[in-house]
Image 1 (cartoon, helix red, strand yellow):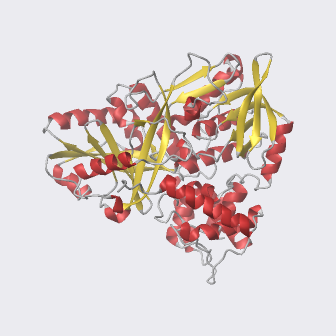
Image 2: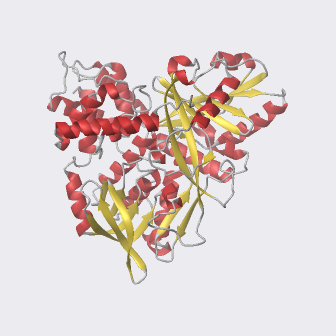
Image 3: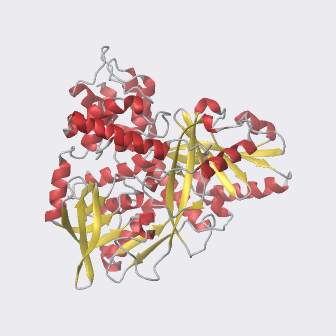
Length: 566
């Protein structure tokens, strides 16, 4: 490792214990008592886990699938205030979200970056310019200007220069503002790993399903859980229990059913499509506004993500896919505003997730507030619903405050407001690290090095070291490529050892984000990934083949392009 890369790496916290820690985690869950048990490994559950740990509490987290395998790994990948919420007069929510956006840009700069977005304005000159211009000016006043400066107003020619594919007819102006773009699944994972690295004895385990509340004299004192890998059941005991299962609480068979009269969770589906970067020419992202909907075109490495829809969906939240109608809706919105004439043939992948909105029965999902709500059942179970990804830290703080009570909260206040996430460093340091790793004779090529740092931050050198230790090196001394998306083979064993990965879907869909952008859903590399995981998890050839088959079957349903029936 180069001296500059070593200096940055050695100044950061160590990674959590490797994969054999799962056995120890399960033993601790079964045999010890915790201060807080968090059920659900989405971003809010992860945030509550870290928040409790930041207060010096010993916390446990159980997740029935993988960290961020649900909504938190299927978002629009935006860290933003929510421009459209200004139309609904949710000024407090927007201001709070913009403050959290600034915080995340400081505390997780390897996973959250600021990007320009063009808001093209069509319609009556001056009227629409004045309306939307006033909204974006208010957005700046509420906090957006602190990170990206005040928005810049463009004439139609300037807007077309930014995005040459825009339709000129009816285009009266454009406004360029800034918002955050994130890797949502890796951010949730970083939150969990930061808690595990804190040294308080906190424990997290995936593939552990909370089956039922554990009650004593009418109070909840933990949960009966099942290890889904072995089928064994055991009890996890804790002084306080937090339900952060999101949309799962709305299911009729919910094991931790809320008390009558509790907040009503409305599942809202958000679908996205992914196209190759060269299909659209633009200097950055875009925000397309047509009557009744807003669609974002979001920059992503080598691609654009286009979304999102906002529709009530009562399907089971797991293995969700984008339906045909949503794909048509997104294509129509983009084609109305541009000359692209996108079709399904342009789409390389799709994905969909459910938002756990809180509102009354019959409420529109578009107009339902994105504010969160914390409730406490008669048993003492504390649950949280609503909110938006950007404000997860505030949601986590509030739900842990409620679990602790006012007196204990005063004694143990949250310490996450200035707590950097694992792998974080100043942006210029991360840039220097990427250049150093890309310039080493045995380092990654510059593009792969830059993207490695964007995923792992200051732990990128450790990923390369692991690859060299176990022989994942090419003939020229450079690290072996995985053959897709500038990813390295060493990232697979790293994901298993240090990032709680247990399946191909964990690695390809969330650790590497390849399942959504590879047209073959990763079929060309799935066997290689299975081999690398097998060396860590002890899979035999039969198990490898089963894992590949199961992954591809699910990935084609969840991330493939739906075509209308013929």
